[in-house]
Amino acid sequence: MFSRSNNIVFSGGTFTQIEQNGAAGFDRLQKAASPGAFHNSGERFDSPRCHPKTRLAVLEKIMRWILGSEDRNALIMWLHGAAGAGKSAIAQTIAERCYEAKLLIATFFFARSDPSRNRARSLFPTIAYQIACTIPEARVQLENIINRDPLIFTRSLEAQMNSLIVEPLQELSISGYFSDPTLAPRLIIIDGIDECQDSRMQCKILEVISNSFRNHHLPLIFLIASRPEQDISLTFNSGSLSGLLTIIPLDNTFLPDDDIRLFLRDSFDKIKKTHPNKPFIPPSWPSSSTIYSLVEKSSGQFIYSSVVMKYVSSLRHRPTDRLEVILGLRSAPYDTPFAELDALYMHIFSSLEVLDAALLVIGLIVLGYHPDMQRISNVEEFLSLNPGDVTMLLGDLTSLITWVEDEHQTIRPLHASLGDFLLDKSRSKQFYIDPRLLHARFACHCIQMLPVIAMVYIPWYIASLIARSSYYRAKRCHHFIVSYVPARGRPGRRH
Image (cartoon, rainbow, N blue to C red; front, side, top):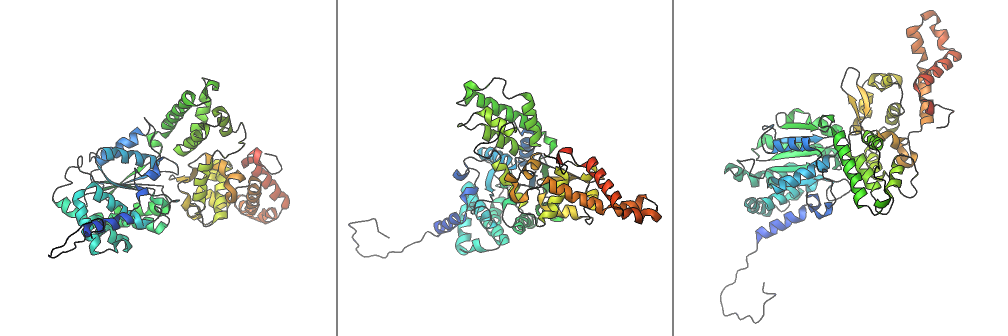
C-alpha cells in the first residue's frame, strides 16, 4: 500500500484499504476487447477508404439514414456486395466521418487472418469498451456489471449483448440522452461479418442484434457490411428482421464504372507527377483504350483496379513495364501481379464442399459456351443434375457468381477476372480448370444426351437404331463442338 513511500511514522489510528473495483472492471473489459478492430486502430493504418470524389451517391444515402432523414424506422442497414466491391472502404469512410461528427459509438472490423478479430467472442466486449470511452456516463454502470460477474465475457452472445450493451444504455435512453439523432452518438458499424470464422456464429450475431431490438428499446443503429453469403442472406431475409432492416446492394445502380474510371485516371496522374521514373513516362500514358480495358476487367468491383494500381505504382520498377505485365504484353519476371486478388479467390473457393461439380458448372460459364448454356435449367439438364442442384452447388460463391432472377435464371460471373484466375494453373492451383479436359467431359455429356434427343425429335421406330449408331453420336458431338466450343479451346488445337 505504501510501496513508494519512505520516512513513514504511524502514531495509532485505523487504516482501511479500499480497492478500486471500478478500475478492476474496466481493466477486465480492456483485456477482453480487440483494439485491432477499431476503425482508427494502429494495426489498420493502411485500411482502405473511398477515393476522393468516388462513391458519393452511396455515402450520401448512408449518411441520410444515419441522420434520420431517410428510412427512419430502419435500425439496421445491410450494405452488401460482391467480393472486392469496396464495402470495407465505404464502412471506413463512414466511420471516419461519423467519428468527426461525434455520431459514432463503436466499430468492429472483422478480418479472417487476424485471430483477435475473426471470432465472435470479442465482438460485444470490443463494442462495450468503445461505449465506455465514447459515453462516460455509461462507464460506471459497465464497471459495476463486470464486477458483479467477472466471467461475463465467457457467457453466451445473448448474455453479453444484454449485460454489456443493453443495460448500460437503458437508463440513458430513458433520460432522453439519445433523443436527437443529429447530436447524440448512436451508430455502431460492423464490417466483414462474413470473415467471422464460423458461419453459424455469423448468423447468431445477426439474430442476437435483431432480438435485442425486438425486446428492448435500444437507442442504437447498426451499419453491417458483408458479402452476400448464403447463410447471411437467409438471415437478413428472414422474418425476424422485418421492419428493422434497410438494404443497400452495391450494384450498377451507383454507377461503379464511373468511380473506377476516376480512380484509375487520378492514380495514373499521380504516378506521372510523383514517380521517380516520371521523366521517362510519356504524357499520353496510358491510352484511353487501356483505361477502358481496365474498367471493363474490374466488372464494377474496386479490388481489381486497386490491385492493378498497387502493382503499377511500385517505386522500384518502371510503371510502363508493370502496366504491360497487367495487360499481358509482358511476362512478370519476379512477382505475381494479382497476388491479393488471388488470395481472395482462393479463400472463397476453399469453402466449396462439392468442388468438382461446382467447377464443372463454372467451366460452362467461363469457357464462353453458347449463351443458352448459362441458363440454370439448361445447365442442370446438360450435366444430368436435379432441379435446384446448381444453386446449391454455387451457394457459397454468391460473392463471385450471381444468377439473374428472370424467367431463365441466367448465371453470370461478378468478376471478369475470375476466368483469368481459374484458367491459369499457377494462380488457381487446386481450383484450376483445364479447358481441354473440360471440353472432353462436355463432349461425353453431349453423347450421353443423344438417346434423349433422338426420342424427342425423331420417330420412335428409328430412334433406338439412331441412338445406337456410333456414327450419329460422333456427328452430333462434332456439331456440338463446332457450334458451342470456342475455336481456341477445342481439343487438338494449341491455345
